[in-house]
Amino acid sequence: MDFELSEEHKMLREAVRDFAQKEIAPLVEEAEAKEEMPPGLFPKLGKLGYICVGYPSEYGGGGMGMLGQCILIEEFCRVCVGIGSSVMTQGGIATHALLHHGTEAQKQKYLIPAIRGEVIGAYGLTEPNAGSDAAQIETTAVKQGDKYIINGNKIYITNTPICNYILVAAYTNKSAGVRGISVILVDRDTPGLTIKKMNKFCIRSSPTGEVTLDNCVVPAENLIGEEGKGFSYLMETLDSGRIVHAASSLSVAEAAYQAALDYGQQRVQFGHPIGTFQANSFKLARMAMEIEAARWLMYRAAWLYDQGERRFVESAMTKLYASEVAQRVTAEAMQIHGGVALMFESPVNRYFRDSRRSTITEGTSEIQLMVIARAIGIK
Image (cartoon, rainbow, N blue to C red; front, side, top):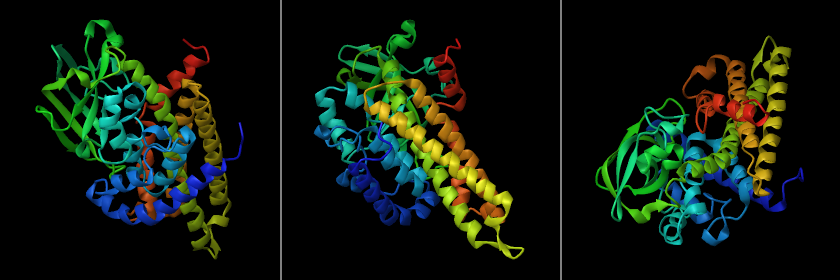
């Protein structure tokens, strides 16, 4: 493994960083207040190739692998985790199964337009009674002739208020356990599909919704891959998604650290910048160290993925560590900022709130620890 980014990846980082500062940063305040993804941003990102830089070029992706996707999300989420999370969903769980298991017709109709930002996708797995234990989903898809009849309820689903389609995880054969779960694409305008927007205290500009499927009739051709393979597709998606999630966590830690470092050098108390006080200088030093460690753990996981090695433990480790670093760093940044950090207008306040989601979504910290424990031989 080369510990230096390629020139191509460096150029990507600089280009995306410049775009994020000039085009996304001015939209953040309004997007957070309205709790919505800025209208028109997806098509703009798609035209520049800034949604799925890791996907193959034959479908409109950038062909830059997992490392490229991590760089993209890191730069976006440093400016705004909410907006970055919606892009992360579009370039990950909402399209991953289509890319790897969809038919050519499905790729032409949904994947390519999604990569271009012309349509928006979502992935419906979580339910009121099924989160970490995905086997407990209750949504069913009963095949009748050349159609599926889908019934169920999904909750906390990113991008659904603005989506054009949802990849729905449902049981097509309940008696087979997880081997009876399938993934079926449901168009937004399908009769019986309703979406209710949900409100969050964090990542507010990433729209989230509750989905109800009431006797939704879907063509059998909308099945993704094979019946009964949906759970394995989900595991594949999580393997990649957790690496990119680490990039999101890393970015909010970086933003909070930089804000704390700047404030520590500017804020004067007792005749000295507060960053020079040992209590604060040690905080900043530890923050810098943990961010650097999280970055290289993420880069290594991304590199392994790009080599074709699907090792769940590295994905779990980087997701777990980066998410916990994000919470520690943002908490210390709040402490260094003091009273100003308590104001909603403070970016550090947003960083702190946004970091809280990092140990919950894409598999809780407890789930990551279970994966790691099994990998080291604890059954």
